[in-house]
Length: 480
Image (cartoon, rainbow, N blue to C red):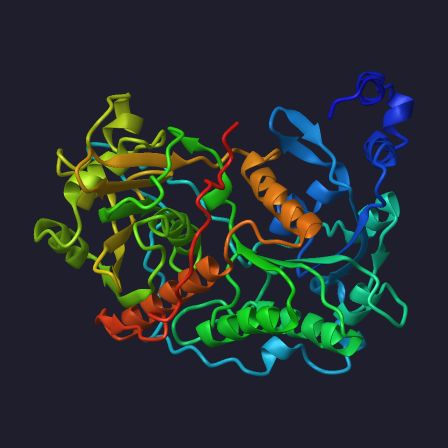
């Protein structure tokens, strides 16, 4: 709420006041207006620098975020932080757990498939598609020490210390885990072996030792391994603490503001995204899944997954394995169409014009068959569009299509939408939507990359057929 006191504080920022960290004062002032003591939050992750996911999300709980037309300060205080990249090897008693169970990667098994630069038709100089942030980028300044000094939280040498704040007992009310980016090996499917499961297991050990568990949020997929992810969900159910995971796409604003009507009969769906495999495909799969789970009967699990590549993607469209009409509908919602649109400003139906094979150098398609017979396809079309878009055909109605809006840096309001859901779980101890959505999405991704490893064969997924859940009837994405 924008109180008079806060307004005066924000509008009287002299240079002297700026030097005294007014954001810190505003945050403390806002919390002082609450009658409830702030929840104590431990943040654990691996990289905390400008533009990292840890910075983007953790800072929401330090200085607040835009929410429903106001600047919202959560009544949550970060009291401790563990950043893996800040722990020198000489201080570790043993190598990090994720370095003890990695598989070597054969050059024959893994090769980059998604091109970064795309050439529009008739162009002598190719405009570049939106660049992905490399995992092995140049070192940037770590923010943990400066943020600790400014906001007064404890920097910890390990995860148990972060949960106990240097004492002997659990001393936090919630855990925020953001483990991505950084230098990690890949397995034989090309998946980056982020130690999300290892971080979670260390927290669970503290919970078990203390006989008390607190809400836990895990950013992005639960694990590169479905078995590990399944055990994480099982641990939360066994110890009775809320667990939430995933990306911001399912909860960000949509253009237009539409959702699958709850209980509708979906005949087919197509999702469009861009980027390398085992990266943006997770975000896209989860966005697609938040729509698919609303179909009649709820989520019934996945029967099979197949990853197609190259000319096989276009052949599948010609044969009707995925709908070209739905692809055209999804692309019509994009504000970043390539081709003639970026060459000379002409809007263009890329599907009807037949130019996609020339724009998209390395297409990929996740073909998903659900237990109830519903079919969905994620098309990774780097070079066609710079947006995440979706279209579905419902029985007896016209297709529904929308864009999952990704706002630009530095405000990145899409992550603010996710922060609101995280805060909701921390304060109510109830997850706003099932973590099994992320469990299923991660399993689909893993099966797709296994299909690729096996020369694009169809993979039966009996383990995913058991992932069933009832989604919330109320839409969970940001409406204002």
